[in-house]
Length: 478
Image 1 (cartoon, rainbow, N blue to C red):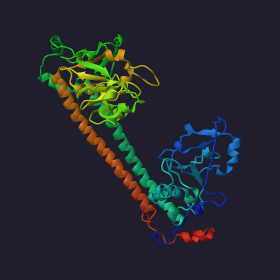
Image 2 (image 1 turned 135 degrees about the horizontal axis):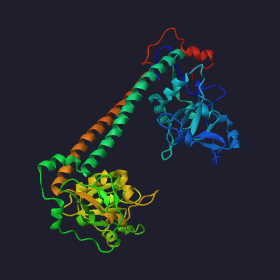
Image 3 (image 1 turned 90 degrees about the vertical axis):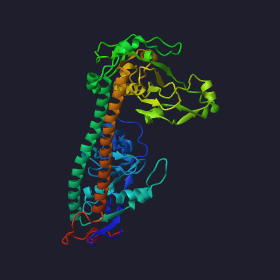
Image 4 (image 1 turned 180 degrees about the vertical axis):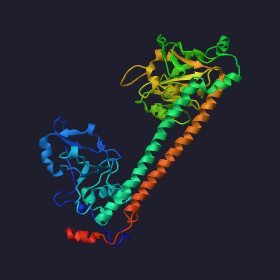
């Protein structure tokens, strides 16, 4: 660690701790939770800001805690996660004094005469420390740090008075950074709200009020008089007779809600061929990896609101022939109806799906993208059409009862265009906010790096040099 100011020193992390409190990990097996026992902290209860989630804290028996009293916590101790997510940092609050940690963390109790606790906390979050975590990390599946390596981590040591000046400066800059981060987070939240508002406005006809004033295509009731519905697959369950209104342009059966002029509530299975898919037997290897694109739930998560061209899995022709799945044409709209309800996307080419989806191959009166955006506009409210609390599923009686607020096809095209124009602007704003957060993260790291190179605040020749402080405390530089 070269290039430090002349009145700084450096030493091992272990050398900065109180003599009777070495760096140590905690309880190996806390066993069952004991409601009136001794609290202990796991890394999962520490968030990235260093806050400990008190509500999630578990407790071990006093007997186990006593066997591990060597790692008992005191107010102000620092907890460093060393297994799994390495490098989480938390200061022990007063309510946790007397508690403990698990073997996934270590306790660090700094000598206050040598190292300011706030300075030490900032250091353990700095690039200088995180680089050392990375250089000492063991394992891949479950990364970990060896305590012997942690104790040897090198610490830059300014005079104690300068440590306090550095902390004051860092706290000031951190406050400004936190305020900026909060503002950017608020922007990201507003972006999501705006995106949903645009979809709802499209589904309710509010984006095309002006268009309807100047354009007068045939109304949907007129169009339906000469329209031939697509043929539906045979069999299946009867549609539900329940009437459930959505929040946008979707409902079970036709609600009483009034629609814009020229629109009409229309049954989806009157406008599109409704189908589902199936999963070929996993016990038959010959049914899989055959090059025929097959959509599963993971694909839905990756392509929500998009057109899908590639899938994570493929099946063979034999897999299709020996299942209830079939190839569906490009333009087919898909909605996940089980487990993860509400993912919507459009097939970009022929594909098959699992039984987790309901699909609609649209007829001439329904624009696929308009259907996709109407389904998306419901958001989480689409669950009201399903059943189940823990795991909602939209069953086929409800699917067959689905009605859509249907404008003329020309107006559907205008809605799609205006929705996409607005979403593009929203995405630009969201990307700018994410980019700003990334620059802010880099700035925070750069500030911490400057702090621990001695470049953040000026040195004071009147300060007792760190090397003299180490001597006085009988802690020679290691």
